[in-house]
Length: 215
Image (cartoon, rainbow, N blue to C red):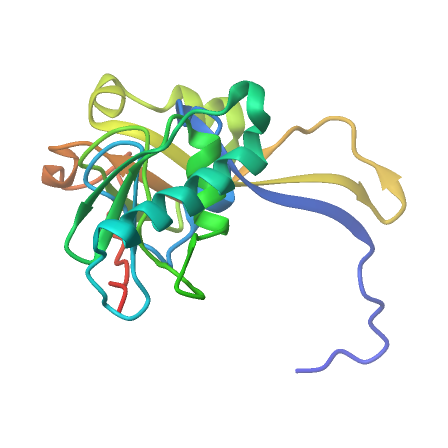
């Protein structure tokens, strides 16, 4: 029902995803929250496939490695450059990135092979064999209260947790000075082996996040 004469509230709220548990070694929340590409089985491994299904021959492999190296060089410069570690399985190039920054670079920019960008099949995490789960609609709470709620079991079975946060700095022209960041109830959990055997997480049900396979 439309409320006649209602003046829309004035406020300032910032919202973001934040790593509240674990060490992502600098991975951005955009990378961690992206659901367009599944996760690689092996840590720090980016898997790329030729756009047309070609199985790369010797010369093709050299071209692909060179293109990956050029991407790395643009990012790091000559001083910090490391020759990329690449091996091939069928249509796919498996790149072991030396750090999380270069994983994100390949996530954003894929090498070109025969005039077309290669397809990103899976992206790397800082640990192997990770499964991602989601929890939605948990009670809102202050950031520190959320962090305190993580148990020893959490620390054993979860590698990383990304929580949705918000912060209100102003309402109706008045500055808010007595409140910090708040958890808004949704989170992603990067679970190790055994996490999925639990019935709940912090008393709430969780679901495995589905990721599409690359055609």
